[in-house]
Image 1 (cartoon, rainbow, N blue to C red):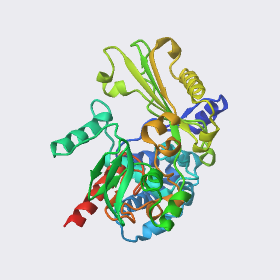
Image 2: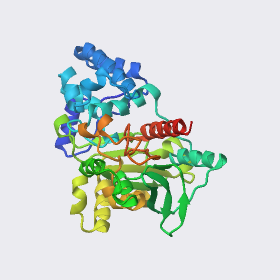
Image 3: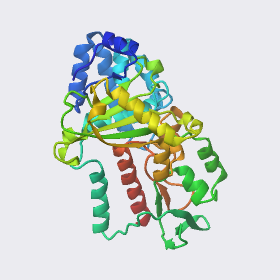
Image 4: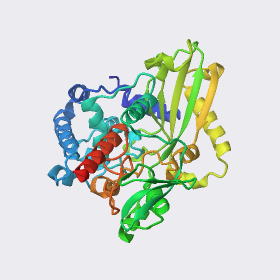
Length: 394
C-alpha cells in the first residue's frame, strides 16, 4: 500500500487537482492495521482499539437482537467515531477516503454504515467477476431459470394487488395480472408504497417513508482507447478535491481500468477507462437541460483525466456517458439515487425500512432496506428475505 504524504495532498489541492486519497488498501484486515500502525506509530494503540470496535460493530449488524456496541455507535457519524479515537488528521483522512462507496462524506455518514462497508471488504476481500460485474447478475439469472423460475424483461409493474391486507399478485403495464402469494420488491420504496400500492397502507408507515431522504447519484463516463496510452500507473480508486474530513463532500471521481483485470472486455489491443463522478442529490432539480449537462460533464471529466493520462483526448475511440437522469430512467429510483436511502445516522440500522412490511407476504430487499447499499449488503438482504419467506411457509 502506498499513501501520498499530507504535504503532497496540499500541493495537489492548491493546483486544483483531484487527489488520490489511498492508492491501495489490502483485502486483509491484520495487514491493513499493521501498515497503518507503521505509518502512524503515535496512533498504534488507538488503531488497535478502533478496529476492535469496528469488528465488533460489524458482527453485531448480523444480529437482530439489541447490542451494546450498536447502541454505542448508532447515533454517531463516522467523523464523530474517528474523532473519538484519533487526533492525526491525515490518518482520519485516509480512513475516510472510501466514503464514496456509501455516498455520504464522514461528517454525514453513519458510523455503522461505514463500518459495514469497510470491514466486509477487509475481512472477506473483494473480487472482480471474470467478464465484469454483469456476469455476477447473469449467474444468478441463470440459476433462477435452472430452478424453474421465469423472468419477464422490460415488463413494468403498475400495481401490487391486494386482498384486504395481504398480497395476491402483481398487475403489469399491459394489464396482465400475475397471481402470487408472496411479492418481493427491490425497487425504490417510494415507488413500491406510493405508486404500486397507491398509499393503501398504514399511514404511520407512509409518513416515515415520506420523510426519508434518498442517496446521492452519480454520472458515468466510459472511454474506449487504443493500445498506445500507458495506463499502468493510473491508480484505481477515489480521487477527491478536498483533504479535509470536514469538507469532503466536494466532487470526487472513481477511476478504474477494467481491462487491466480482464482484457477480454475490449477488442484486442484496446483499453477501457471507467469513471464515476459524484453528484449531490440536491442539485438534481436544478438541471434544466440534461443533454447539455452530459456534454459538460464529459468534457470536464476528460480534462481532469488529462492530469493523469497526458493527451488522453488523442486516444479516445469510443465515448459513452450517463447522468443521474439516465440512472432514474433505467431504475426509476428517485433522482437517480445510487444507494437507495442515504446512509445517514437517522436512516441506518433500525431506522432503515424493515424487510417485512405492514402488508402480509410483501417483503423488501435491496438497498432500500436493511442492512444498506453495496453488492455484499444487498446480497445479504436477499438471503435474509429468502429465510423469512421459508420460515413463513413452514
